[in-house]
Image (cartoon, rainbow, N blue to C red; front, side, top):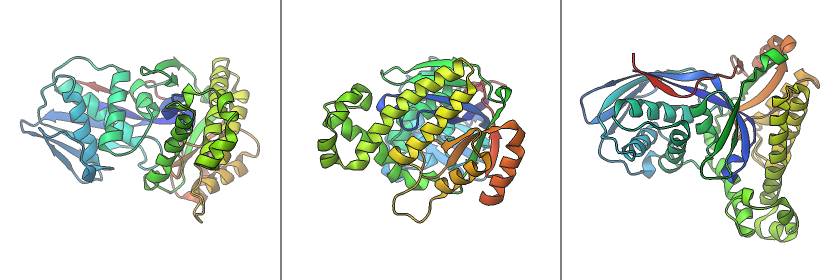
Amino acid sequence: MAVRAPARSEIAGNHTDHEGGRVIAGALDRSIECLAVPNGQDRIRVYSLGYEPVEVRLGSYEPREDEYVTSVGLVRGMAAQMVGTGRTPAGFDLVMQSDIPTGGGLSSSAAYELALCRAMEALWEGRAVDAVEAAQMAQRVEQDWFGKPCGLMDQLAVSLGGLAYMDFRTDEPVAEKLAFDFGSHGYALVLTDVGCDHSGYTDEYAAVPTEMKAVAQALGRERLCEVEESVLLGRVPELRQSLGDRAVLRALHYYQEMGLVDARWNALQTENTELFLALTERSGASSAMFLQNVSVGGSERQECMVAIALSERILAGRGATRIHGGGFGGSIQAFVPVDVVDEYVTRMNSWLGEDAAKVYAISSEGAQAQWL
């Protein structure tokens, strides 16, 4: 059986999904490719090119703290989720290779989770699992077995495929897809790995939703989507006093970004690419100034900020560039005019390392398994 799960790019909605916000995200033309076969044993074995083998014995599915931030935790967690659908687990071997840069903020972990999901769904007899449920399973695995707080955007983008607007205000997210090709509108989507693995900043990443939720809870709600911006603005002094300035700034970013997500989606739907790019620049500024996930305060190392500054130097007022995904490392995103894309990639690579900057395209296919 063949299994494929793509990478993803966050197009709009930086750190909004965990607050019940809206985002735009797209599956990418990079993926994890797998072959899966039953092994007749009581264990799952995963062989990934370039990594140590992973083995999980069937029968024990509880989260383990010593497996946080490990592939073992992801395998065990997804097995638990699929057993929860009424399936009887059976051992299998999974051989995989990937061209998704790890630690680059392209959701290699979500692709890994969804590849496991689709393999187990096909190999273990049971009911079909739709794209939303599969994404929700993967989110629980990442939160409870991998130990990383996360929203649902990454997993849903990988599961759905294509370019999609997603609304997370309700328990069942609503998604709308759009066939849009940036290349046909004169721009290339370029993601540049800044040379800093964002997985090393899990605590900094976790502080973002923690602080946003603290603001919501101080206002009597669980998530910012449940609070009107006017209510927040009416209580700024006391929130600054009780929670600190950064928490308030991050909440203000949420409302700023919500308006920008909706405006960018409308721009894409009407094929107003120049408006989309201008709004993307505003989003990047909000992430840097208010969300503050571009660099870690007080640190001499500011890989993402340097990469953004260099990117803007090349673009010289054309296109757009911004932090990508969770931030604190990983990748930056740029929409580069096609007439300068070769120069852009060459110069970014000369500064940040060979193959740091790569051109990507939206892939219409989400995570899937197919019998050979």
